[in-house]
Figure 1 (spheres, each protein chain N blue to C red):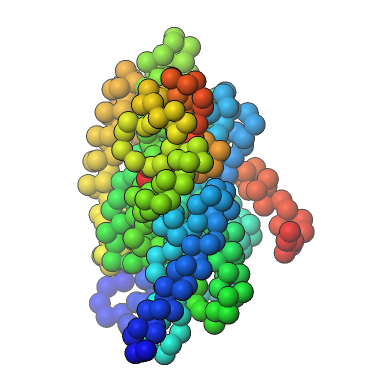
Figure 2 (cartoon, each protein chain N blue to C red):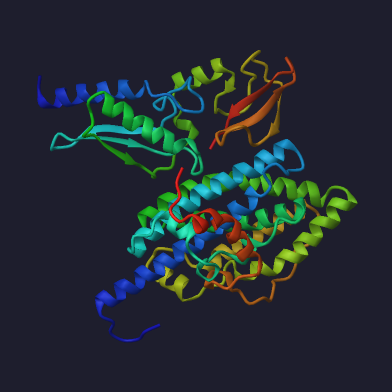
Length: 157
Length: 264
């Protein structure tokens, strides 16, 4: 295998590893699903760099995500990998992957996307916003007029 | 301002000191306002607003942490975010006096929040294009959150101002009592001038214009009149505060002051 192919295989392996690290608040999605992992790359000296970005500035899960990522890397034998915090460009809910959106919806959280906001339970577009804010910094509170169930919506930012 | 030749090292040091002060002013306003909003937890007029105010507080404290960490690095004396937040006295805090004003009733909290949201929107929008990459990154992130905050605060301003006779009277009283503190929002001093000259911050006058236009639009939606520009000596950003800041810090810093270095 060439050095470049070997490096890329390693990077793929680490991406798969990180896809197994759940978000501490919404464990059905991983930090890769949420667009938190920005890059995995090997530098000229062979050192592995992993970049993660905070979602909301004040999200209390940020520290938990950092330590869970560190632990996952260490346990898989990448203890010398450098875990870097990336601030720019600012995280956007547009970065939640299609797989992540599907998992959020299946879990009962309306994924971040343009209006209309559809009820994750019955699919109705007849929904109303109860509050711009919810139980965590990433969610707003909605209600379905059709099936009458309350639900969370992932905030668009 | 020094005229003529300044030794480069001295000039650099002065720029670093000005940058540190500039960043601390932004950080302290977010921190103090976040702490004030935290006082609402468990006391909001409805569960949704209780959660809303707590969420604003989280964002603001998150922004303050990023800014304080940076200020500590620029200062270069080994102070981290915790040392800066918990171990400085009131005269060393450089927040806007507006941020430290008590919560009062819900109208007072909303008017204070809305005035600062409008201010942060302009300051962060400009800073997102700063020549200082770190500040630009923090501001680009913060401005998105601030837009969300402004939607909340301006929505409530309209509902309260254009609501019942009671809510309208309370909102007007809040505006009357807080308006004088807006005099310092865009008052440039030597720190701002140095930042502008270095390309780190944008000139304040255009931001002040945009702020005033937004404030006028929001007040119009709330059917409230725009007060005339206030005459009030601005001091918070120079470390002079109203009596309210000391009490706030007393509560916020109590644990670290009583048990230095305590952790859990």
